[in-house]
Image 1 (tube, rainbow, N blue to C red):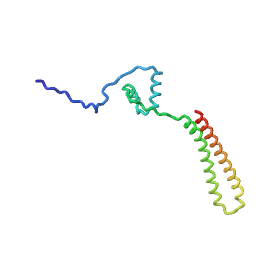
Image 2: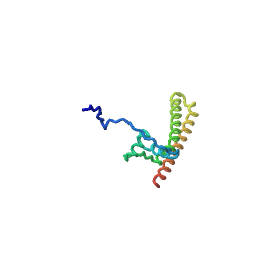
Image 3: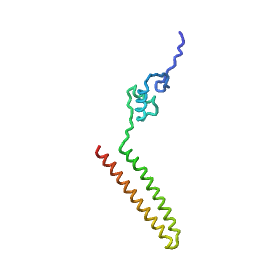
Image 4: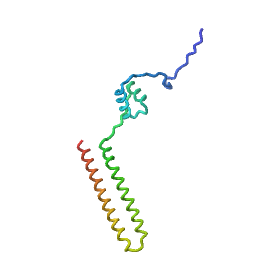
Amino acid sequence: MPKCDHKIIDVHNLTKIRSVYLGLTYGEYYTIERKYKTSTCHSLSEYLRKLLLGKPVTIIYRNQSLEDLIEEIVPLNNQINSVRDSLVELLDKLSLQEQIDPLTPSLETLELQINQLCKIIGETKKQIEKITHQWSQS
């Protein structure tokens, strides 16, 4: 009897041994790539494999209203931080002062900074209200 040298293959531990090549136009490739990037798949191969085998593909949903809000709020937040830092610096200088007379210009500067902070906070509130209103209409 001839000796059989067939190896038993563990089906669960297979590496990718076959490749499939697919010709696509630039437009088709761009469309597939764009959809892949909105999924949770780590590679285009993983995305295509799931689609071809009929497995579920998880798509990331982006809340555009929230992204718009963040886009509008970030610059305002940076301005608020800048004003706050200026106020802290000014208060540090005031705490080092010993006489009342030299404090007069510093107190005026402090008042201007506080007014500027209030204005920026007001702008922030308006933007939040605007985006909230737009979001509630959709």
